[in-house]
Image 1 (tube, rainbow, N blue to C red):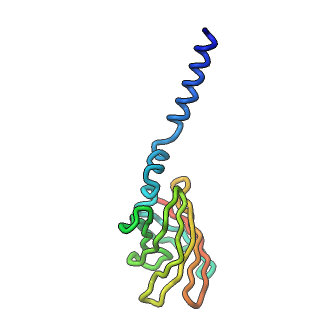
Image 2: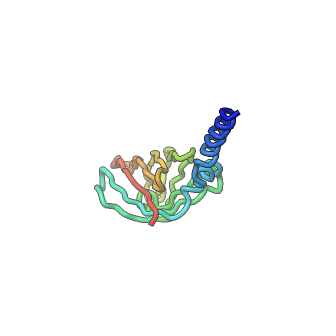
Length: 142
């Protein structure tokens, strides 16, 4: 009988850890993976063409056309009116090949990133027609 009670206590403890071991944010992220990406961010960017040390603001909103996509305003420091589209899958974002800044001749971009520890780390390319730039960016909140 004592053995059965001990086994039951151990089983309940393990189940308790499994059920309540996650943070509330983890549960929320599983329900809506886009939510953690939304809002205002600071960006630190370094690029092959322009070098290190670019710091600027970006704003991420949900794409009203697709609830699993985000719109990144001021992407590649091109102004808040310019938005890049990215698809969210869990903690991963994918920037499909697209053109931003069409009025100024266009910049073809594509890349990917990951949300981790409250930051977004991105790698992308930007082709202006003359230069191919490779960019590493980190988005963080104040």
